[in-house]
Length: 229
Ligand SMILES: *Cc1c(COP(=O)(O)O)cnc(C)c1O
Image 1 (cartoon, rainbow, N blue to C red):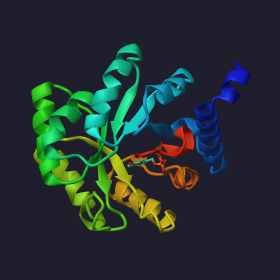
Image 2: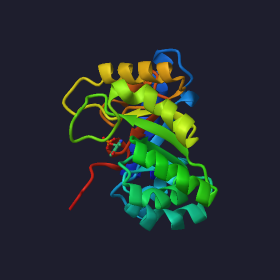
Image 3: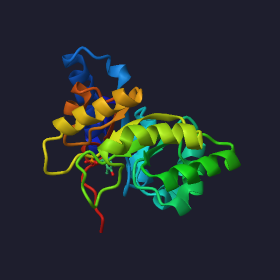
Image 4: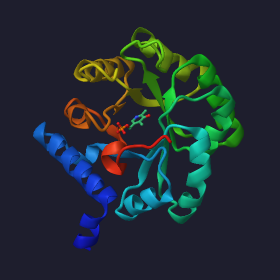
């Protein structure tokens, strides 16, 4: 068992990440169980994902609806307790597929998406949990609602679309210290009365845990580098 684990590069990354999350949480007096690891499996096939499922991981993240639709239904049939999260930008014409497939959608970031999701959730009688994505770095090319509009947007989701928002999500600019972005997201969540914070990736998840992340989205540190071929 131990030898098998050590021989599988995917699993050594996985175990390293779970250990580091637990340590980062303990360092600031947080319960490690209060931090959900979202294993980001985008670009990876079943052969890479299966060992991680078999090691006990149950929460996975994908950034493209189409890709997830291709590989997850079969896996979920075998492992019905898997939780699947959409962490990438959502086009309104994919809202129906997203509602059908995902348990959590972390990229609600504009009025049109809120409206489409509300419509699809009603139609399909399914209610994925929802996060609002905030563009904390106000980067032009990046998805997410601007920070100064975030609290009002959460309120509008609730009041105008009947959507219960669970938390906020951010992806800090790649070339900046993530700390101030995590702090901003936490402040906005407090202002909006939300308890959940999705922040932290392979390069900065320990910082995110120390700053209050309730979920971290980790891909390459678990699965290795992505090959976009
Ligand atoms: C790909 C991706 C991640 C994981 O990135 P890594 O650096 O590989 O850990 C996290 N969040 C989002 C939104 C992503 O698209």
